[in-house]
Amino acid sequence: MAMFAPKCHNPFMKWSPYLLLLIFALGACPTPVEEEDIPWPPPEWEYTPLPSEGEQLYVQYCAFCHGDEGEGYIADNANALANTQFLEVATDEFIKDGIRYGRPGTPMSAWGVDYGGPLVDDHIDTIVEYIRTLNPNVPAQEVHELEITGDAEAGAEVFATHCAACHGADGSGNTAMSLNNPFFLNQASDGFIQYSILHGRPGTVMPAYEGALFEHEIDNLVALIRSWDDDQEPEPLPAFNPDLSDNLINEGGESADFSADLIEDRFVPAAAVNSATENGESLVILDARPHSDYLAGHISGAIALPFYLIETNIDLLPKDKWIITYCGCPHAISGQALDKLKENGFDKVAVLNEGFYYWERFPYPVSRGRDRYESAAEEDSSE
Image 1 (cartoon, rainbow, N blue to C red):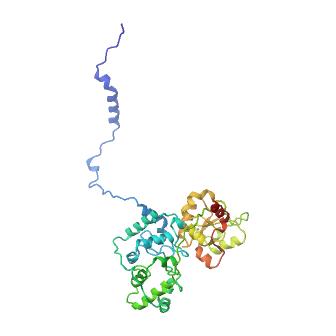
Image 2: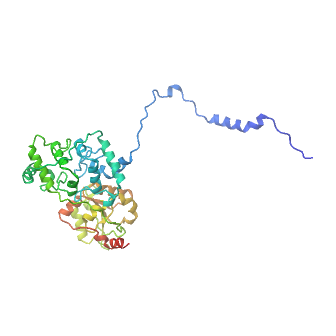
Image 3: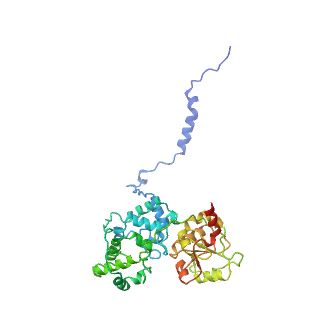
């Protein structure tokens, strides 16, 4: 006959481990907060929303020239995107096309992915939506169906007097935007141009000419600016995947040293860089602009590495050689590139002080297309 121990009915024996645990827990409780220690009224809680995708993209690709608030003129006299008079006549498509195609030959790069930039159409749409929030509820001016007739020859005289100092004698830009840029003229209606002359851009250096010029003089200016339109259409870029492991100019030469040439511990003069390349000194010149700008024209021997791709290609760059970054603005994009390099432990880095367009005008050696990457281009086309 099997023998079993009697069942235990002692409640203390059954629950004692839990009682002990409770005792220890109560012993660990902090001293109760006294009523007078509780702040009253409680501090207000401030909700800080996360930045939208449009804001993030704007900050990454636009703000360093156009300003965090769209105020403009941060770098190279970039226009004020949040200006009321601009937003009144700039359609969404006008702004999107400006981002997508850029203004070739100026510091405004093409950011569309089909034109050498990083942005797909959805990205561009969200950026434009965000730009509208910088100055909301601006009413659109219905001016785009206007067809302005005027005398371009007479307009040239008015332009020379009132516009050339800022926009350049031939409209190619000086301290203000390029008016003869084919992509701008392809996107801007006669009404856009007329309205911009009449009302200017208050808060910027662009004055309003309503009342300062006769109506026919403004029409003549529109006719002149429109006469510069050559109907040039943007064309998508073929695939371009440069080999960044081949990055040195004058490989095998004595290493360039710009320590004595540095300005504010950040910039180096174009003359010093050109002298180093002519003397056979070894260095890297890094074009930090989107690929469309590089292919249109770049410093001879430079590598094509847009600032937004540096992080993913950092291991291909040498730390024992000087790296000179450049862009067109002349410090914004190249400065972004330099900061990325410094964050990753590169000490021998500097920004080309005067930028690409000074280098090109001087003139120092400039190349077009894929000269450094011809073999890679041939391989791409054969695949």
